[in-house]
Amino acid sequence: MRVLIADDNALAGEILQRTVRSRGWQADVVTRGIDAVKRIGDTARDGSPYDIALLDWRMPDLDGLNTAKLINTMHGDTPPPRVLLVTAFGAKCCRKARPRSRAF
Image 1 (cartoon, rainbow, N blue to C red):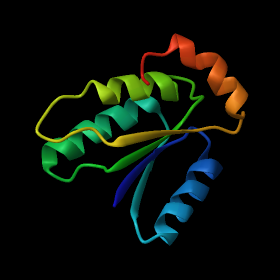
Image 2 (cartoon, rainbow, N blue to C red; image 1 turned 180 degrees about the vertical axis):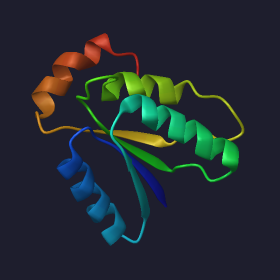
Image 3 (cartoon, one colour; image 1 turned 30 degrees about the vertical axis):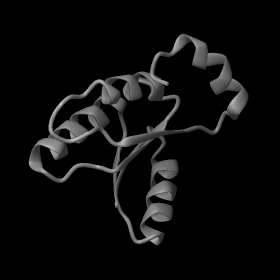
């Protein structure tokens, strides 16, 4: 299982990476949403796509919701990875933002 983690908080990214690796899965970390989109596209073209993308909901350049939108519009021979949003802000914040998002 290949997992890409996108989190602008280095400590949170490291904790997620350790958790994923403890399951025996491969995990890579990027710190920006746009880097996640690029990495997912690059690995899909190289024939080694990610199975899951864990995205921080709040990132400064491209937040998790908009990153997910871009990932879900990717076309090619390989389907995009499953996307899970991660946040320290709680579900209530995510529910407020959801109606504005077309990612899900």
